[in-house]
Image (tube, rainbow, N blue to C red; front, side, top):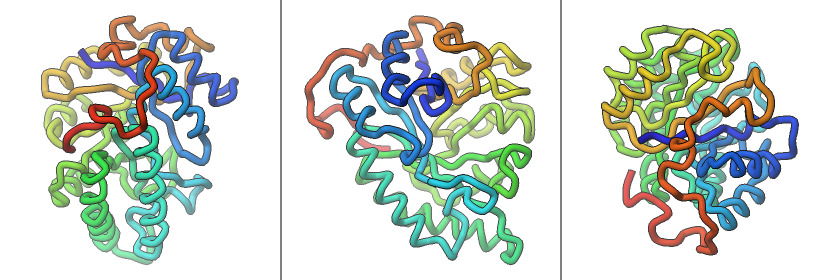
Length: 282
């Protein structure tokens, strides 16, 4: 059974960050994901992990200012130093939180460079990062974003993203499938999932149109979940959406059994790198 991990950078945003964690814990969830570390409370996440066994599934490599010129570092040859520094920071945070995955934002399309140059830069950065991720037992993911919401973003094709992952050919580098962005860009979510399941390292649910909770739009999430599980996807599906409902009602659709399928959520006093809290390999 797949579990769900609410994204606490998107949900309960009327509350301080630490209170968002308490809110999802009180609703019975054992896992969360979040966005950029500079917009989060890493200390609160570490405390929730220690006190409640809260599991951190995924977060983004930090991009402190997200705007038309700053959408990541992966595909920009002039920003290799920033990519490396932010990757080192992310791996340290992942170690502290026991996080499984880090999403690496691709950056913006640079009109002065051929697209092939940027794709090669992305692959070079991923090849250099992959051994570090393997040592940290973390999966690195890349995702596509739709240009209506994120003008100028470099990766807007699932084919380009999956081809990049294939060419890097490392088990710690995978494609992140966000249903909202892919539905806006391409549709055919079941086809994309089925054709690429072996390369998919993380899945996020948000409905379309509107990027709201499942059930508010046209995506058939039950079919996607069944196909993902049948194809071998394991773990958690992230919930990254702007809710229409308020507070707990924004997560009321999640079955109780899928809030804590692994039974992780129990008090614990283990050190951050205790045996068994991280996977043996990517």
